[in-house]
Image (cartoon, rainbow, N blue to C red; front, side):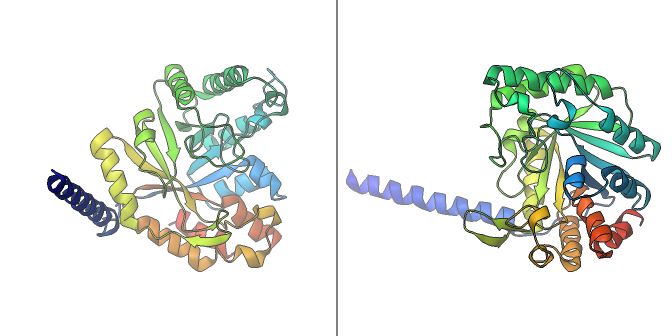
Length: 335
């Protein structure tokens, strides 16, 4: 009996080892065919542009008019939209959306409690003291107000509800999957005509949970980042086919498309950009790395990429008199 048990254990161990090898080969070996027509876009955050010391309207118009960007992912910030409970101010967002429409650009609008840029959860002060059930009600009300205001606007092609809702990053409450499903369900009910994007980590997730909830999976793609846990810079070892094969699985299992909603095109250091020296910034982003990341993205086989860093390119041009990144982006968007 012991002999049989021992043999069975060895067989299980062998099968597990073979499975690991098979998964590794599937995700790390091979090449993806480059998409024939790639959509290039830019992420934009009004708050981030302002925090960089820029005139955010000027920065936004430069993206539309000088770079000729036709695809924008606009991140809203709750603390800018509802500074006081029940009093909403959509004037700045109205302007961004109207300018995009004037310039023929399409918008992926990110809304909710957790949206891009630190601290991720942009909570108004009045929300922070509310009990959880009241906070959740306020989030749903914010989503309702936003969708009802813009659902007739043809410039918006899709909604993104929250940002990486299952990733424990930022100064945010613990993820609540059941409540997040309520958020997505509400948006779909209010606007059944548009798809909902749900984003997730490109490197540390297989996107299954995300694909079950959203209509489109939005992945991130970063190459060199600061790892706060070990206090060092990390260069991700994942090849382009890693993202392609995971997208294939999502397509086969859930019949959902994967797009890249954040492609690294700015530095990621131990501090926020506003507090990081140029010398430190160059450790994770140079003109060569910018080009390298674009080339890497093409090799994944994905056909939609929103570049993360448009505000920083403009900051480099206007504040540091370095046009290199801006000109690289212009070449990409005007080709």
